[in-house]
Length: 280
Ligand SMILES: Cc1ncc(C[n+]2csc(CCOP(=O)(O)OP(=O)(O)O)c2C)c(N)n1
Ligand code: SF4
Ligand SMILES: [Mg+2]
Image 1 (cartoon, rainbow, N blue to C red):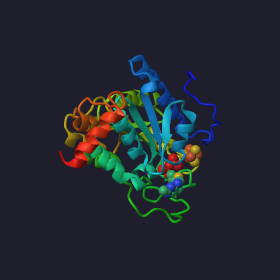
Image 2: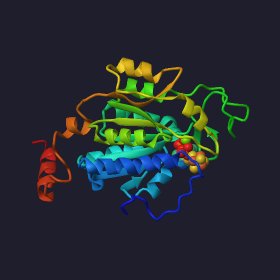
Image 3: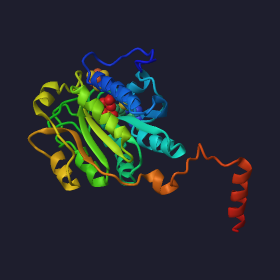
Image 4: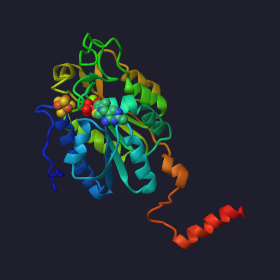
């Protein structure tokens, strides 16, 4: 469908920040099409959670993944077909809890994938348990007296891990967020966006974010400066904090070879395998 929406019934709570994300993603896909990236080249994946329902609502090809594992799924898709532009939607519990090591290693190897983390500071789908992003004092079914832990700073962590594109969006600023997504997909290498997403049912942060977000005019000049920006205590910077050019993983591995377009005939592959087995 041209509005990129499927026939599935939308079950997000009215007012959920996921609506802003969904609208920005559709707008970004249209921007990309206008810049010569057809939607047929885009392949998506998603983790498990309220965020993951975007997989059902967005009319794009893809592969629904497991909780915390979508970063690996999209890396596999990219290696199988380097012409594909792959992106995944993850939750903050999904990406910064169970899936954190996958994120770090994808960043370390500069896998050419785009990761969009719906950061609502809570486990939404499982009804309000604290997540790695819940603020100290957050009350939910698993922290009835308030969380005693500090949240992570995922942007600083991913910058340290070597991410070559690091950004933060806000679901309440869809136009800016759409622009960030389009730039992230165009980026060759690991592109990562943490998007602030209020959860009206378990962590309503609209008022908080409206008073704290501040647009970044341009990416930092050095990685250290980007880390300092990510750690700002007074404001939450939104925009692209860091971008650098570096050979992506599939390029270092394959050069310009493409296992789909340049697939060898079976007889030829068998001959090569036989040669390896013989040790010639
Ligand atoms: C391997 C595994 N562990 C746990 C679960 C249960 N589970 C499903 S969704 C979820 C929390 C999701 O939180 P988050 O990733 O922040 O997504 P949100 O619902 O907030 O969008 C959990 C723990 C699961 N489905 N699979
Ligand atoms: S529980 Fe929260 S994150 Fe999930 S749909 Fe409702 S408002 Fe959105
Ligand atoms: Mg969450």
